Image (cartoon, rainbow, N blue to C red):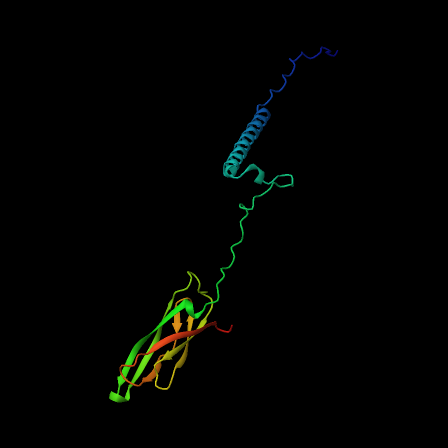
Length: 189
């Protein structure tokens, strides 16, 4: 005969214990997301505070609108582009000129040979000389035996005077030599 006894009952299998990993991953994700949201809120608040502090000096009407129709801006607040300075035309009255004697050779009663050079001073309005322009300054030296001597000097970079020394002959050693500026023009103008 065959043994038909049923096998003994085994206790039911215990359900597997849930692992804590999935729950930990979700918890970490929630914590990281919340921290990121808090950091973003702090940064945004800081930006708003800084902008409102910088803009306190401006009237509220001058603030541009985020929706397109901007506010009004006072004419005093508009920054005008810096314009190039303008210079008036210079005249002989804007300068004084003297002569500096660099060499004198006298021949008794026959007179003297005198070498002179101009010294120029500007007496016009402050900042009246254009530094980017070359001015031709024509002057007349008086006291030469044969008549006035006309010379031209060039003034550039506001202070650089380019000239040639002039050799004149006087009738005597007591003869005074003088100079007068006759014209001031812009070179090439």
